[in-house]
Image (cartoon, rainbow, N blue to C red; front, side, top):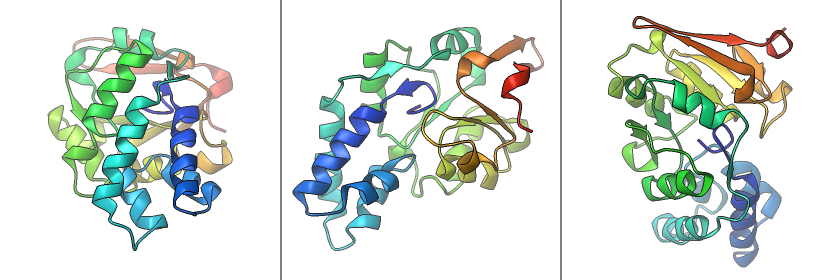
Length: 209
């Protein structure tokens, strides 16, 4: 969701910088850890001595309240409207309340299927979130294609045995080089849909070399 469908980077970084400063932690390190991961895992990584459960509640509320600049990314609304609802899922490191809040802020529809931070024991870069997404869709991993914007997300999809298209909204092409293809936005992808399959056509300039 974040970084693929929605531009929430300014809000994410504002929240984590504020939280880091309040706890006398290095804001740059905290922000770097936060992208593409569940907030509770970020807290455990940067502040292992804190009560992660309690801090996670605080951070989540801060993220829900910070909606400034949370907008849909180019091509997101068009792609969601074209995909059959039973054939895609949002798999996100955000909690369910935060997911619904950000989709609402960005004017995007909530999907039929979602896997959120609340639904897994181990978040990205572990494969559990994407395997649960495949299960919701009654699909094998080999039949799933993932859109990701972070190295942790690409690693999670790879670990689940899925192909990945990376979007360079948060990280550079070099940092996402393990993806199968790299695009600058979802606007570069045109779906062709029939009863048996979904074919995604990428513009020539966006194809990985």
